[in-house]
Amino acid sequence: MDINQLLRLAVRAGQIILENGGETYRTEKTISKILENKMDRVETFVTPTGIFVSIEKGEVTLSAIKRIQNRGIDLNKVAQVNDLARKMAGEKEVDCYHYQEKLSWIAQGRKYSPLLKLLAARAACSSVSPMIGGKIENTFPVLINSILLQAFILWLEHTSLSIFMIAILGGAFAATGGLVLSPFWDGLDRIIISSIMVLLPGVTVTNAVRDAISGDLLSGISRGVESLIIVLGITLGVGAVLNLWMWTKGGVVVAPPVPFRLNSHRRLFHPFQ
Image (cartoon, rainbow, N blue to C red; front, side, top):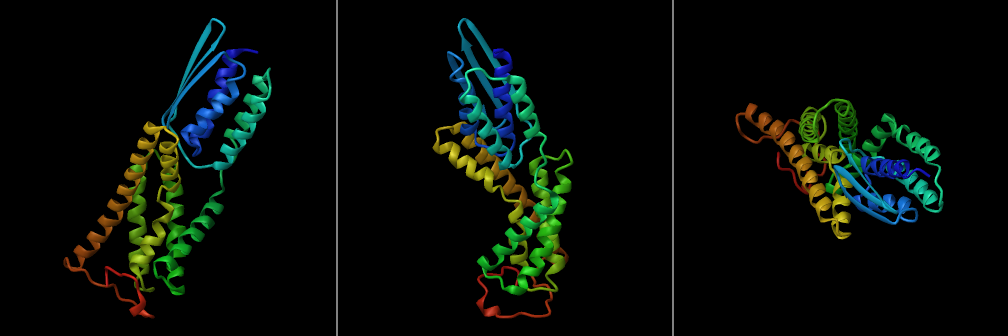
């Protein structure tokens, strides 16, 4: 068994986990699980942007560094790599070429289809509207706006824009869609708030908390800062469009015209009306 190949295999497995939404402690555990019963000593250090591994076998010491530049969400790939790591951990002699092919197949596997993402965005956003006081009539503009916003985000993901710029443009798009749809359906704030659910960094926040709890303070802080940057970008995008809209109205906060206002006395809040 070539320990160079084995080290590259372990780093590749960790890279797939980290690039697809896995926590840093899970990445370290997976790498260690693959190597620990085959090496004399294994040391791993993982951050959201890099993997550092050092191993010792007899008098041979090897180290590997892998830069992580692309990060997304595909927990199915994380689960597949975890299963593969358990199999490799139970083998004293690992066929590195065989498992490299399996990891390549997992990494190149098709992510969630655009249609599935659009349907998931529609379901997630429409379910938020009733939680903030929305009625049945509010779900229709939310459905339209969330689907268009998700399609816009999918297009932006193929560009070289940073997550901050994507958050700004996504927030601006959501606010613009809300302003366009609000004359036909009541509840501008509900349309915007429900639609931006697809932009919020839920998995990133969860991973930040889990990393911090598990003792990976550096990763927890960095993921927390990343989440704050995304939220700040969404806020800037939405705020810029709404301020521009209010400026065209003479600087006065006014309600857009709507054809019907059912049960207006039961609204939880409506800052624009």
